[in-house]
Image 1: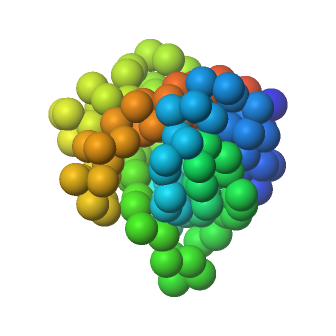
Image 2: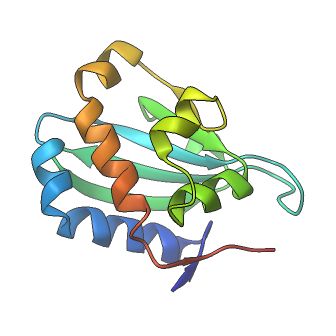
Length: 135
């Protein structure tokens, strides 16, 4: 189990994504990297970025950084630690969090719309990652 917001948790996301056959199938046409961003709030004094290079149903790279300029992903999902915890523990649905703007998405919404199955399958992968959340 890894503490969310660490390189160890990024490595587990990559491992789970690459082992998930449903994500592999749903993401077979996906080409684009993401930042998963933990927003500054509460105990989080500065944003934390997880860079994920997602390509055709696989994660080719996963890197934690505190500098948003380290990578230039096409997409980002950002939320508070509390919201990430709700989604990753299955207490809230990622698509519902997006609809209520608690989970914010940036990037081509047309592309995401054409690949909604890939996005949904990836949020399902996130909920399988054994994660601890700082309190």
